Image (cartoon, rainbow over all chains, first blue to last red; front, side, top):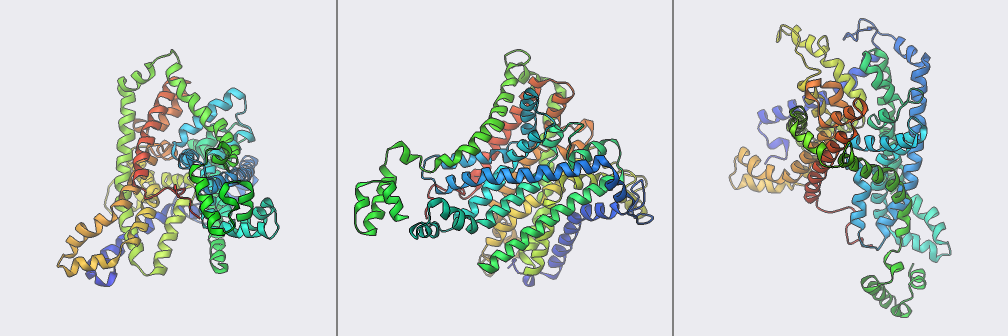
Length: 269
Length: 313
């Protein structure tokens, strides 16, 4: 029997656990490394650093370019989240509750932006905005990010909506609520986990998006990953490590929030 | 709902007094109603997203694909060039070999991890899973930058290897194939571990016990019982990783060198540096075609679609 560790030979168990430990370290290595490096005092990214400093953080926060990029990133991510959820909600309702034919094909159509390579979406959308003269605008950033964030919100909301018993909504209608009231006051709270998860996914997708953003960016408007990308190609200054740490920090924060919300839902359910 | 549904769908059976009769009536309506409004009930909710995607995703995509056969002159010239020119053929070869290598290495690293997550006590398993998720959701650019610093000639890994006396001079691990494969395999591990772990979790341990009771050695049991049971997870994970690797841009662009350019980088280069939209679009069409064909097989491996035809409630 192989699926219980006790039944394995000692050597086999040792082998598996050592391998696992090493792979787990491999997964953590670049993340921990970059966070430590952002506090290291060496300009040349020597590791272990000769000393510890907050100098690079100072440089990051006092540099208008980096700050503008961080602010733009946040703005794009928030707008993307709002639009992705707003577009995803009705779509999920139609796909789950609709009785029309071709729902599976439509589902495939809506998840297509997840499958088509990002580079191709980026080039295609870039060509369109080039023609319309919209490149380098907030609009082009948000639109391109919503395209790739939408499948995530649709899938999350669909998952929640399938678990939600529609007879509860119907009960509200029977008790005198209008259908719209019932949806807003009964169904939306019921599928909140899916809406929140979808929103968080959309936020993370946008926050970390490089390929689309590099194509949309202009010298006057760029997001944090774009600023990192362009800086990276010139030199490996530790300020990039600071930006990386901030990107990682926000991602971790969003993950922790998602986990906390999930736990609260499990408890209340 | 029963009442409103009945008032919205005037059918002969809807006036039946009993709830059972009404339900029957509804089932009948669903089956043989032919009125257009009936058939598309609820579909209007699709309009905003369809409009959005149609305008900003499908139209530009089709526009891009058309350019491949329209520019600079109408015809299949771009496609001919793509296959005839040895430099371009090399890009195609690189794309597939890198994706293949990345799939192989992420399988080799992902399998033990998925297995261990299934085996160890729950608390430990959850921690391992959290590490996988953390790495998955950590900024792609940040991780790639980190590998760039780690792997460079004066980087930590080279220094450590030299200090241990394993090598005499720094290994070249960035701006070449090694760098791309290390960086991308690292990124793909979670996409192997998550489906594989779900498959392993679902395997009934009793089956393996039965194997060993019937006299299978641990090795036989592993290869003849355990691995075949993992097959669906292995295949879908590997296929997903292969497809994703074909379309990756950031990591190969930063960790790879000029001689191992892959299709996505090629497309961007054609657009940004040479303004050769025709060739870029032909390459894009090829990449989309390969991706969609492989993805079709991926779907075939999946047990069911999340909006399955039943939609029962």
